Length: 95
Image 1 (cartoon, one colour):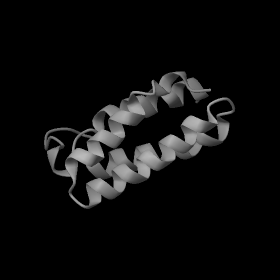
Image 2 (spheres, helix red, strand yellow):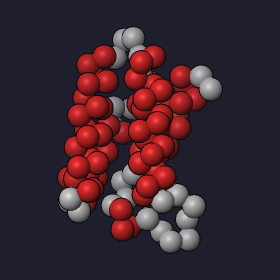
Image 3 (cartoon, helix red, strand yellow):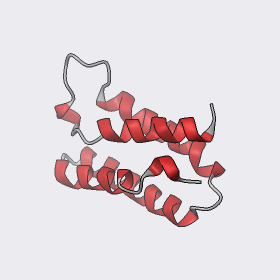
Image 4 (cartoon, one colour):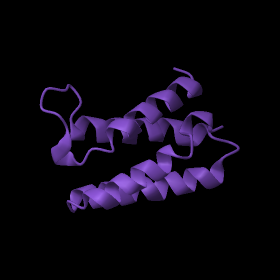
């Protein structure tokens, strides 16, 4: 899978990650655990390939950690804000 495809998948996973752990629909196939695992796996594959946006990489690292910690502490708003901050970078355009 190309970097562009991985970035698109990462952006898609971010949109689902705006749910707090208890807000994922029970009828959906995406769960909090699977979505967070996807984010971690995709980011681990994307980050080493980025050459131009290193400052954004560090920002994404910190915001992902912030989101995981916030959701783990049941702080829905902080977790959502961190995820949206990443998404608003227009991650599909990172290089």
